[in-house]
Length: 270
Image 1 (cartoon, rainbow, N blue to C red):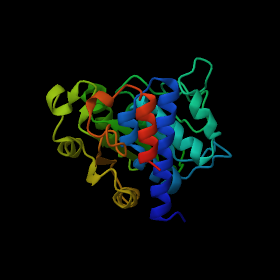
Image 2 (tube, rainbow, N blue to C red):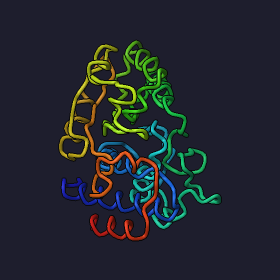
Image 3 (cartoon, one colour):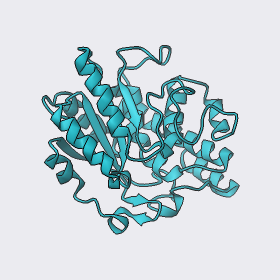
Image 4 (cartoon, rainbow, N blue to C red):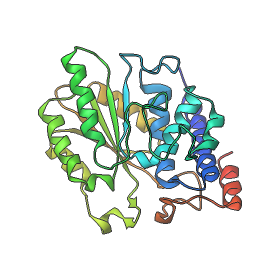
């Protein structure tokens, strides 16, 4: 059983992997990858039923990273969980690499859904959850949405379907870092109150600190015991979490650090 301290250390390693990947690629989306690192840590090192030695295990839990541009976070998590060698992170976004800018389930072990076009991941997660119900399987499906991404209308069509089919094996996590590429979500296209919206669509909803390991663990424990409806966890996070000069800066949505910034970020994450 991993301790809270172990999980915090894994999260630091994952954040270092994110910074390394984006730096060597000279391209990527560090801000939203860093904000979701704690959630991915808890999912892959504690919560999900998975086996890195058998990535396609039929009864495994599934993860759909709908905000696919945060792929560096998923790749770093998978690497340190043992799906592939962490040295591969330095090939991120290289034309010959399996680790492209958006996750590809046909190229990367442990990726359950190819994502990139925003707003579509929840529809795919619904399909997985419905399949589990139809085949009497007990696996769970987790779907990570960005708070800017939920401005896409298909998200709400999918939310309506999830509640209609009573997908209590589905858990949606909204990475609510309050920033998207052009600024605050409240300024670009205000989606608040996010929790009330999901409630109105028939979800069980929780609001948590998405950078607090213990709160994340408790939320997933509650979600596992919800019956008859899907769960949405609204995770309040900090964009660029863990790197001081990236935190709460929309400008770090999609750019790579310089060598000086890279060194500072790695030092802060030691």
